[in-house]
Length: 357
Image (cartoon, rainbow, N blue to C red; front, side, top):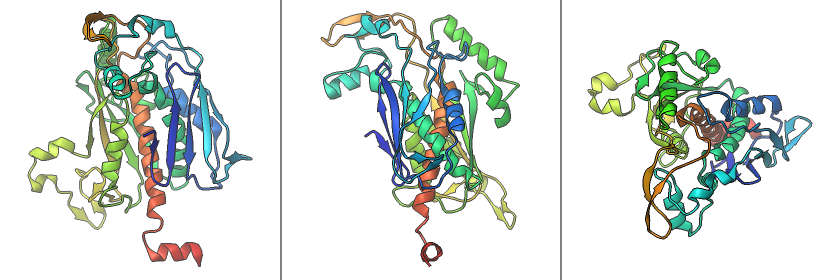
């Protein structure tokens, strides 16, 4: 499936080395002011080639809106956006066109479809996420109307974890680091891995503030379940935690419960979600990325004929996919929240009366 959401629905298309990537976003309410400069700035945060900590591929990632917007506002019809690829080097992949790259989706795509686009992974490439960020920017414009903010940053790289989280600092960090005290160590870990033709994993932290109480559709479309679904759909993500996450499994109930006063919750172990429904507190999501599988070391693999061979990659790849991946996680969270807001509108008769009477 290439679509996500129920009311605020987006569909992405395109491949890493194809002509273009893009998305169609359906369900955006009419009358939303579309800030194209903001949408482009979101893509600029994710785009490659910005520094030594990302792939050297140079893509402007310039987004063009094709439909659904008139005189700067949404019309209520599907919004189509396209991002043309300008810096493909498909010849870098000619030596591995019949090989299965370890850690990549080559093996599974080939066995599922009987064919695969070997140029950078085609549809399975993380380049597809540029279209998600474009869609996510629209979602953020809708959330902004209600004062809801989605932020992200890099919590850990190569096991070096932030002690304090400053989302404002992360905005200006080259690696979107949350903690100025650990930023340099995290940077060194990325560069050391790059020097050794290797890669490192990392963890992104996404925080949603000013969420209203009541978002989430039990039983089978819970807010935390859909957020986890959204994060796990991102390339290289291998784990997701909401709030206290797996650590809650070693706590006592007396330690894990968020006690309540008339001023609100006294702690936030739940990560802002109870029973699959937002409780009004900050929603916090940790997203765990594996090391980038594209490394420049000889590795053992097989080819499409079953022969054992050595694989030695060329090309341009991120030494730590979690860095730019944090922006994608932020965008996916925004898309989920926009969808949940629209789904929640008709849950009470009183809400319907406000609209129709």
